Amino acid sequence: MMNKIRETIGRMDWKSGLIGLAVGMVAVGVPAIMLTHHDNHAPVEATQGAKTMYTCTMHPSVKQDHPGKCPICGMDLVPMGHHHAASDEANPDAVMLSDEAAALANIETQVVGSGAASKDIRLFGKVQADERLQQTQAAYVSGRIERLMINAVGDRVARGQTLAVIYSPELYSAEQELVSALGFPAGEQRKALVEAAIEKLRLLNITPTQINEVIRNKKASPYVSLKANTSGTVVDKQIAQGDYVKQGQPLLKIADLSRVWVMFQAYEGDLPFVKVGEIIHFTSEAMPGKTFAGKVSFIDPLLDPKSRTAGVRVVMANPGGMFKPEMIVTGNAAANMKQYGDEIVVPKSAVLWTGKRSVVYVKDDSGDMPAYELRQVTLGPTLPDGYVITDGLAEGEEIVTNGAFAIDASAQLAGKRSMMNQE
Image 1 (cartoon, one colour):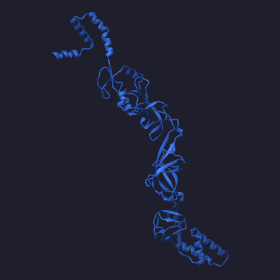
Image 2 (cartoon, one colour; image 1 turned 90 degrees about the horizontal axis):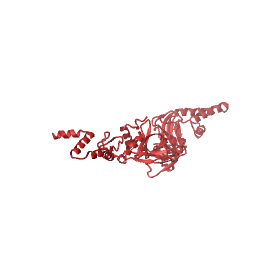
Image 3 (cartoon, helix red, strand yellow; image 1 turned 90 degrees about the vertical axis):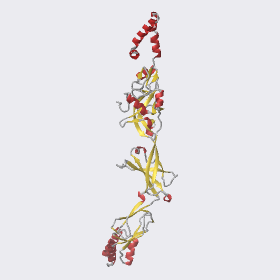
Image 4 (cartoon, one colour; image 1 turned 30 degrees about the vertical axis):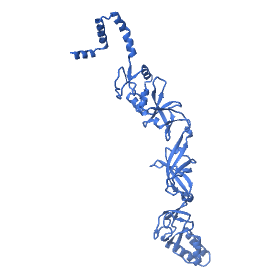
């Protein structure tokens, strides 16, 4: 029976409670005028003075007049002042967080400013032989390689050095024509035949010394010595002794490695900031502890369709052959972006990027409670630790640099503008 009475009293509203209280007071002899005085003034003032609203530190839009759990995130509600509600109403699109909520979300802010931006460009590449100091040694006559004096790639050769001896029936026939022309009686016909035979030998790249030897001995030979047409290092070998070769066939590739190319690959997004004449500092694992520097002399006009990179060439002197072809190098180029000198630079952590738009959260301290407003921005070049902002922010504004995603999540849960649902 007593339990039913308690349940009935618990379901009574505040008016019924006041009526019951009045009846009780009359029953114990309290004057009616005293009851009327307290009913008109004291309970109202007490209620207004003691009433406390509760809200969620992560979702200030949640408010109720008794403690409990946040229906959105389940956190305990905390007491709040009347100014919180007023601030929230004044900034309907802003996310408002108390100091406790900001601390829990690890919110960090920074006042932005403009300044000369610089971009550190990371480049990877390798050493190559200077193509202008590289020549291919070809066979000038068809025949068989009787002797080969070059044994392996890396052998050093000097200009005029004999590289191979070729047995060539074609050469023997051409020299025999010269010998036959020399046997004609002196006259215009003999002169024409001799000149024609000599020119044929010259076209076969037979040296004047070898031609004079044939004229002097009046004897043809099927053997010819292949002479080096440049000095340098053999970087490619495509023949072996005993091979048959055709006229014009490449046999050896000889490069002068006293000067080399260091070829870097720059991604297309970095190409606008790499200019001819700029300095690139680079290192190689083959020479730890050493840093080299060289000027950009050429940038490839064509982009590789697979890697989306273009070659950046640095010409380096190579005393002692310290730079070897195919050596891997890592370089850095500091690009001074003068055209972005007056733009805002913000940390990467401040920008939320959806693929279609980029946004930041700007802090507003003008109200009683800090508010965070969503702001769409236009990104410029990407820096190692930040972005250049070309539009959307002004110097002196305070933005969120850490915890922006937590603020955006709160905005989404509260149904406010966020990076995913803004117009």
